[in-house]
Image 1: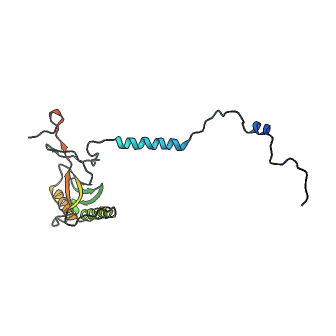
Image 2: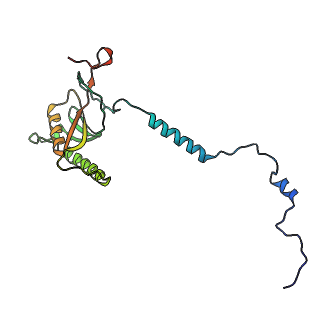
Image 3: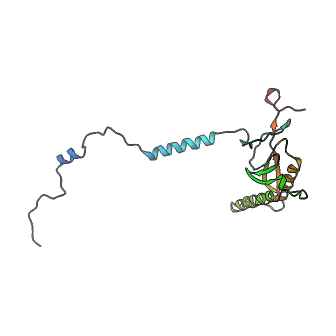
Length: 191
């Protein structure tokens, strides 16, 4: 290997060249946003708003064309459940039609499609709770609840069949939605 005389290297640039071409010593007019910090800030704001949000009662969508009956003794809904809507001639579960009055067997005291779907929902809920380490005691009734929205002009046969279907599917907590009659002072009237 021979010895060579040192010379200027290709990658070496004099300091003056670097200052002229790399904005050395000058501040930029535009500022960059740190998106990570901004996303963190918005996440904290959303969590704060979700934690501080308080709703009195259940916000529930009332089916189109449904007139809820009035009740003197009414209480606010404090738990969520599957919503069974009973209209003049049909029964819905969570907005999906389960049966029509004209298509039902008059001798059957239940609605088979409603029983099947509610049983599936109950079994799925029980599996989820068992996976979380909270299995249901078979000697106790199922803890889930169902909310019934019945039109005040609905045929009582539909209401009776829906209640029999809920009982067969294993639901014991059944709540009816009503319009509470408000008296003086903002309280429900009692007679």
